Image (cartoon, rainbow, N blue to C red):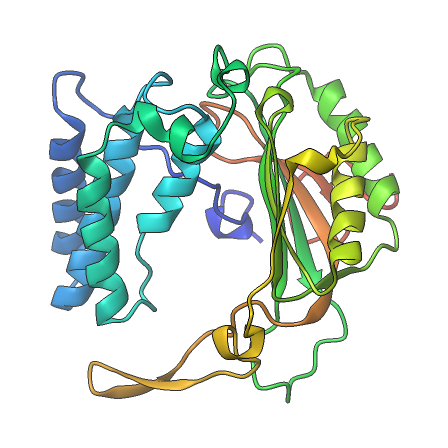
Length: 308
């Protein structure tokens, strides 16, 4: 297995585009990059549109400085909200394009008012240079006749505010990897259709957890916060339960028409159990994340394994 294969690592929450020439506007870089991709292969107009749109989105948010948004994690949120995928249908593509057009016309510095964040929590919080932690889970007891693909789960939105990209050491990563291994050893996360949000910007948290029961969601949150010896504050929790969850998130794949072809949709928010497979540390200016922990043997050069 080649160690430089980027597909081995789940994608980061945001994509960084480095401008090769300082005096070229980021929007121009987006167009140049998109044209380079187009020249290398024959694509449909829809694929071209999606690639060009995503390059433009990443370039736009890359230009936003730390003062443009109240929280760096919200920058990641809005980026993901408007990025397109190859599975998006026509309405989704047009909707995301329209949403991105509206975002570009907003005063993003006013987003703290939209999110109702107290000024004391927004002021002087700079998360850009803080390492990011991501936990990656994979479904247990998957049945091939379940009518869907194997499910996974990710817990992101964790910034290690006690470090910067320069001050964090390998020993810190090893210590965190060992704590992750010990904390989640044998633990089962029961995912479902409900969504728990936890926001504590001063401590670097903007977490989303899917749950089958609220108690189960709280158990996952408690374990995540315990990695840094933090306790859950109830005032920072928001539960979101859909009134018709099985209608909003069907349990089986649906057949839809795309470009005169029948395709299967991905099952969103399946009710399933997942276990921790790996943990990744994202550090500014490093192309690939550091693998803090891996219990599968799939990822190269982990800091910590079950046998270490």
